[in-house]
Each structure stands twice: as structure tokens, then as C-alpha cells.
Length: 217
Image 1 (cartoon, rainbow, N blue to C red):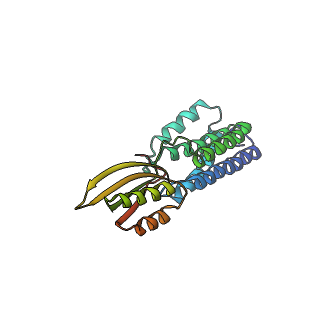
Image 2: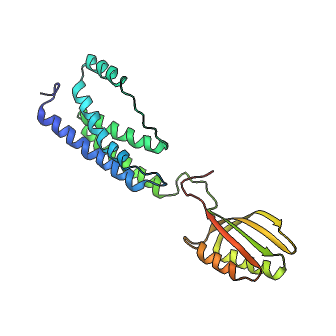
Image 3: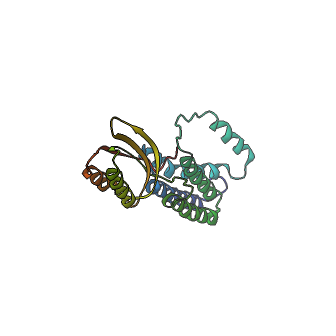
């Protein structure tokens, strides 16, 4: 017997906890965006549910054991810092499902991971929560002649779904520096946009800086 639970039930609880935690870790790895991905953190998510299940199996309904477990945990210092609040949600999800397995609330554990996984994939792969209106900054120097300005405007209209002038300043005799916020008409269209701009007589030093889709400053 482990606590007041038989060995067969305890093993079933631990195996289910690992399967559920591994599923949460898989969802985390496949919905991760940005830089700084850590394989060790993903493995920690997969193991944290097992640890939580072990703790709940050991405690059972014994209050004294629960207090002892809390006291033991206060001696442990976790030095890892989570840079993204989203990472914390995945850790909590794994721990919560582990706790559910530890107390044999198997329906809550399975249902919880299913709903959490679908919700995590939806908010990650959709535009949920995004307020970004532009995805690139375009800068170039161009002649102030009307013909050049007309050609530039035609190229921008073809390749940008939306644009906003950030800055326009004189850079010499009959030369101006332009800076625009752009919403590109198609993914990867920045190369063709730059190529067409550079073909216009009087346009040079055209550059595009794309924004990180995971950051909205």
C-alpha cells in the first residue's frame, strides 16, 4: 500500500500523470514562439506532473503529512526564472493535472488536459490578443520629383495592405528620407518590395526591418 492507495492504483495514477504532463509539454514545444527555447524546461513540464502525483499519493487525506510536505518544500529554492508568464501557465497545468491524478480524479485530469491543450493551440496559432497593425518598418531615400514620388506610391500600394508615414525629412537638394510603417500584403513580400523600389530612378538605401510577431511595443 502507498498511503491508503494500492500499488496498482498508485502506478496507474503516476503513469497517467506522466502521459498527461508529456502531452502538455508537447503542446508547449509546438506552440512556442520567439527565441530562447529550452529543452530542459520542456522536460521539466513533462516531469512536474509526476512529482505532483507522488506528493498527493503520499499525503492522501492526512493533514499532518500535508503540513510536513509544505515544510519540506519551503527548504527548496528554485533559482530558475520564467521570462514569459505563458511558461508559468504550462507548469501550473502540469502540476494541476498531476494533483488530479494523485487524488484519482482521472476524469478531471483527462478533461483538463484536453481543454487546456486545445485552448493553448488556439491562442498561439490564431491572432488572439494581438493589437499589431503593422509588421515592418520601411526606410529609403528618394528624389522629391513628382514622377519618382508617383512610382514609389504605386509600388507601396501593390505590396502593402496598409501603410503609415512615420517620418519625412530633407536629406539634401531634391532628396528626401522616407520612413513608413507597413502591413505587407503577403508573407515574405518584403524582398520583392525592396527590389522594385531599387529599380525606380532616384530611389536608394531602401531597407526593411520586420517586427517580432511575439512582441508588441
